[in-house]
Length: 405
Image (cartoon, one colour):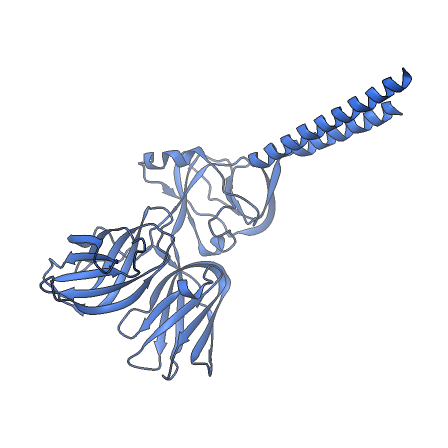
C-alpha cells in the first residue's frame, strides 16, 4: 500500500512539473499579410487606425511573424504630439525660470521678434501630471498685465521622445516680455526647457491621421450643461479632437472631455472660446467620447462637426527577401515583446522602405511566449511540493520502521 501511494505522489509531481514547464501562449485574433519583400533591408510599416483600433492602447499585442511563425523583432515609433515643424520655430530667450515670492514658478521670456504673437510652443520634459498656467505681458519687466489665465495643461508626454510640445494660443499681443506662471504654491513645476513661436510662414507637420467621423448626439440639459456624445465606428486611438461650434459669435466656456482613459473631471478641463482654436490634445482609445459644456446662463452652443485624429505610428524592422511575413495582433492578455533591436534604435541610419499590408482578417494565430516570472513561481511551487512529499514519506517510513521493530 505504501508503495502504491508513493507511486501516485511521484506521478503527481511529474504532472505538476510538466504543467509548470509549458510555455504560455498568446492567441491573436487578426492577421494582415505584408507586401512581398523583394530585397533585404530595413522596412517601415505604418499602423493605420483600423489596425490600432484592434490593439491594446500601447500596442503590446502586435507581432511580425514569418512563414514559419517565428517572431521578427521591430521598433515601435510615433510622431511627437503637435502640429509644429520644429525646424520652423523661432526661439525666445528665457530670461529667468525660478520660484518667486508668491511661491510659484515664473518663467520670463523676451519677445525678441519685435512683433505681435498669438501663440507659443513650450517644450516640456515628459510628465504624468496636470498643471495650470497664467500668461502675462510687460514692456519693462516691472508692470505686468494679464493676457490669459488658468490655462490647464495635461497629457504632457510623448510616446517616443523625452519632451512634449505644448502649443498655447492667446489674444494677439506685442509685449516685449512674456511671463508664464505655473500656478500652485510650493508645487513641483513643469520642466520647461524651451519657449518658441512658429516662424511666419511655417508649414505644419502632417503627423496626425484623420479618423472616420463620429455620429454626434447633443442634449441641452436644464442643469446648465450641454452633453454631446461622439460615437465612432471602432475603438480608435484618439490623440486630437477638433470641434466646429455654432450658436454665438462670442463665447468662453468650460469644456470637459470623457473617454476610456479620460475619467477624472479635474484632469480634463479645457477652454472653449471664440478667440481660440477649438482643437484639443487628448489621449483616449475608445469608440465613445462624451463632451460636457458648461453654459451657465448663456444659450447652449451647438457642436455641428467633430473630427478625431490619431498620431502617426509605425514599425521599423529588418526583413529578408521573401519569407511570407504577416502582422498578427489582437490579444487583450498579451504583454509587450522584448527585442534586442530596441538597444540599437539610434544606430539605424538608412531610410527604411515603406511596406504596405493587406486588409486585416479574422484568423486566430497562437504564438508561444515565455513568462519568466510565472515560470519562477512554478519552480518554487514544485520545489516546495517535492520537499513536502519527501518529508511526508520520510516520516511515514520512519513510523513503519519503528512499528516493525
